[in-house]
Length: 185
Ligand SMILES: Nc1ncnc2c1ncn2[C@@H]1O[C@H](COP(=O)(O)OP(=O)(O)O)[C@@H](O)[C@H]1O
Ligand SMILES: [Mg+2]
Image (spheres, rainbow, N blue to C red):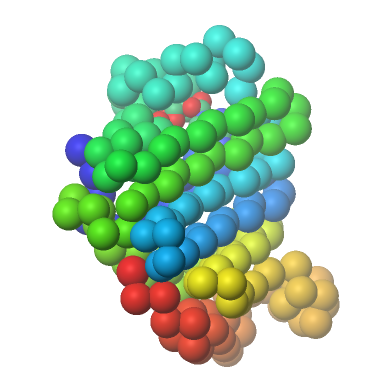
């Protein structure tokens, strides 16, 4: 089972980071056409997972949420990558954070498109939970970096990122930065 767009997986994985109390979530998408390879990573400074949870978390029946008995975000992310001649990586340290990544063969017939990352990062950045996000989009050696810490520094503490004019500006600069690189995946 894989989602229709990789951006939806990234949103889901980033939501785990927020639930884990992360203050900084770093999302990276790297595209290398020459190697026919791409990679999506989410790294956080949340509470992390102990060895026991880490072992079980790729199993579709593992969750620590109380509202539903089955956790599917991580198993789907893993299966999706492995079904596209890619790899899955998960590293976590209790009290320090978690890094989760999936790679894909770009040309694999089952690989979903990246999807609307501008919308995904915009939604996360303006969700108003005081979490900072860094989005790095790297295409064939060129990079676009979006960092909410820089925006907060420029705005001061009084103005939330969800303020309409700020949110609009965030959305436009994401679209512009991403379109300029135009990774075509
Ligand atoms: N970034 C993370 N930091 C700490 N714990 C995590 C993180 N991501 C996932 N987990 C743990 O793994 C469990 C399974 O995650 P997931 O497969 O996304 O299912 P769900 O979010 O539906 O529980 C979560 O309930 C949580 O306990
Ligand atoms: Mg989840």
